[in-house]
Length: 351
Image (cartoon, rainbow, N blue to C red; front, side, top):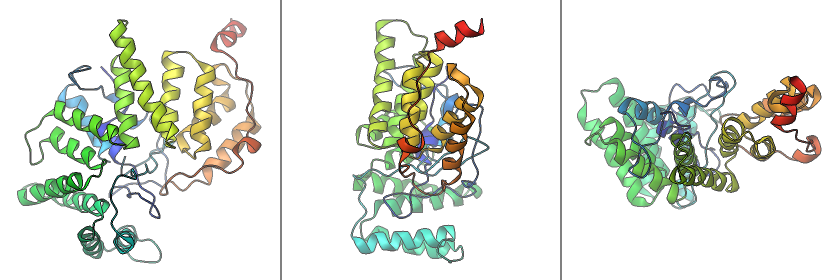
């Protein structure tokens, strides 16, 4: 059983440094773009839940590796993992706390002329956390994860990693549940429990984390894609509902996941192009790339338009994958809506 998104993938969205966001993990090459055929990293997973279907531990491991790392992204040829915004519900403390957090990011990532200094970054995160910034707790947890993943015998680091995540949960940060889900999936400081991990992803989505909405919604839909019972149809629609909600809240990557559903499973070209355009308008590099390929190659029944594809490529080339996506100015002027051809009409012409 394969799904669409992964626990880890959802978590590792790089967050915009100037806003309510978190950066990518160590070793991330987010200046590059990732290509995994036409599927995101996490499309190899199914959804686990009593209310849906059980996943093998191996499948969920693949998912979680990518979701505790979309609050922090990565990228490979054409597919790009961009930052996902941290929900407004995640407390950031006062202005000084946020300033300390941002300065920590500067040292962590070598921004604004500063040399990388992870020790100074950790000091600033600790100061920020003391003044109520939950994002700082998650960044410190990530740093402890780096440490114990290299030196697994240092069990106290595992425990402190978990303590920081639970502290962020207690502060009311919805994204912290994704980190906690990864701990339950891998048995880091707790007994491994994949069902509990997916329950935490659902809880994160319900509390407003858009990256969790995409992870939960995509997996819920794809886990039931072959189920033709009324219950299966209801689960698929529920999955689409989560994706639509995330897109409506301004998370452009949800448009990419919705487009895969409309294209592969529903053969609905009109809605596929519509959600890709909306995701592209929001500055999502994956939607821009997919739209460009559709018009460059004449895919999915659409007429080739190299000029149109070139404009999409040019917009995408200007996107900084380390920054939170921003809406594209004058999108409809640059790329006026085109008449959408159906899959059926395309098939008739090629026969």
